[in-house]
Image (tube, rainbow, N blue to C red):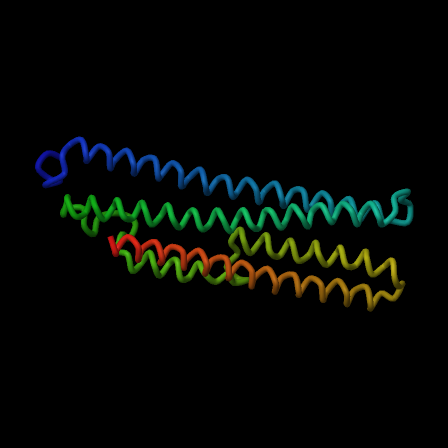
Length: 213
């Protein structure tokens, strides 16, 4: 690489390479950590909902109170999982921005790399990705969307148990569960979008401060 990175000294070049490797490793660890948390949540939610189905059967010695408390635990776990996934996505975006910045530096000092790197390095593409990230949509199927849908179903089951304590009318119980599920889905999508937009705003603010310097 001698003579290719212009004013960058060999020591500075090695520092940039080390930073790139560390950011890449942190990016992968952050992605895997989010995947693991969602897997744990899905397994716990499935186990609890399956257990609730059995404990509320006609032959069960356990009452609905036990199922209610178990589902409350899953609701809390789901809320923490959703917030961790949001945080994970925002941190992932930050890592990608920093990695792309280093790639642009390498391109600037090694012109033969321009157009040959496997991922885009221009800032407009990165900002476009951030803008798309700021909207959680049902058909995207990401970890946040999966967590949102499971949380909604769990809240619906919770309200169904609560309604069954008040009335025996199947239509009322089903309507309560459906309404609670839809409200939970809507509320979570609004919340996630707000968090993403706020994270994007923080990024734009930091970018403006860096430009001012």
